[in-house]
Image (cartoon, rainbow, N blue to C red; front, side):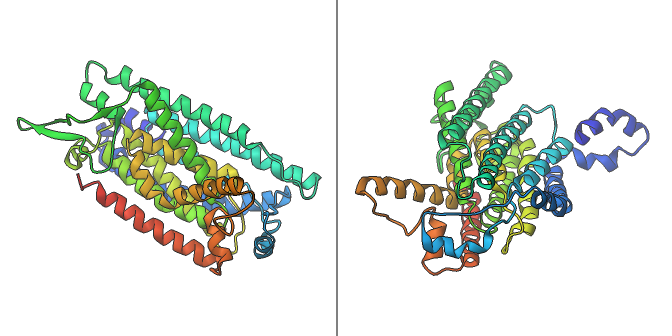
Length: 398
């Protein structure tokens, strides 16, 4: 809104010689950094009030696992307020509305993704916690298949809309950009090549049709949303990792939306995708702010209300900037957490009760193996920071 207001008042500001002061707000790089700062301040400022309200509503978690030793380790977390993800969702949403270009289609879709998954997570958390309060020992929220239906529905909508937007926006007038917006970017594969002194789309560019594009979107968005949800099991773990991942996505969005940078680094150029850097910056700031209250010992948990939209937005941004495979590296810890659960469940069923890990997701395996909770969290942060740095470095290796 602020960006749109400056654009609207540009002639009036120029007449009075003050436009130079406001010009910096038209640059996506500056607004991305400011979105990080503003989102952080919103969470820090509203945190105590929201935590007190959650405590008053008796929205406290009571973690319980099918593992006696693990239950003993987490016994001190009982009644810690959850649903703190409303702080994150509000900060990301309000910051995006204030600083992003609200004429951008990708921003509209990001807000849809945020509201859809935050609402789904809030319903699940509320049902889970209120049911537990009425019936001690019971934690029935939405069934897994119910959450999956809504996640898949959102992913299908986003995949089809993004694909169709490229067709209606660039077909005919900008065929190169249309190809880029639908291309499959594989590791170390160039999206551009030189032809008679001019950079043109690479001859080996893989362009996806509607349904292959939609299927890839489904896998990325539902997978990332559930992966962050699974990782949210220790104080500061998911919020700290998402802070790093969000910053890396902010950089990738700024590159993809800048034609000069995109061509120089040989990655797909997606016009207006740099507006998603504001969304990624807001995610980063909100997670850092939330970490203020979520670090050990946690004063609040984000719950599904925060983890589902954060993961969904992470996947959505990767799809728009055509860096789904790079997301596998940046979010390597999230991938590991999700794979550990799938391996554990599959092996348990196949062998009639045997386990690969002491407990899944894998952060519990290390916790039960003797690492303190703080050691697990900080070491996973460090791994994520290294993976994010490696992923950004590979952008140049094409």
